[in-house]
Image (tube, rainbow, N blue to C red):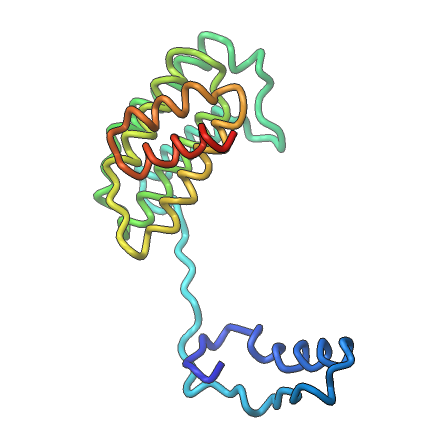
Length: 200
């Protein structure tokens, strides 16, 4: 707790009081030293965390707006009967094609691009009724995951989206999702698909 600390972090300053209260509550005050609030001062204060705002470039914003239109702008997604119409399917297929062609070259960071594209793929998979286009969306998403080489800074984000795919595999899409992961020829995607088969 004496290491450098972000200046907008508030949890460290509350830790001594929370710890001391737990010691008293457990009746361990005679056995355990109380924490001195002055003893957890950081060696130095760093700046505040920066917040990266997504969908700032024209291309990312256009894809995001297209996804919102497919979902519906109200609090709930459009009803399935609307999402099964020819018009909706054509719009979804067009968005899927544009998403597949998006390179993200104008995004501020590779992490921003990876998050935004994965988010859009995941959203499409949740919205699309079962169809050949949805299967294509799944394969495109898995291929994007396969081609992404998560460095240390993006590894947790990459695994978050892998987890989202595995959650899909715990429903009606189990066979298709696991097959797409196993056929990816990516060692980690294949391993997690096989572990999912064994675990459930």
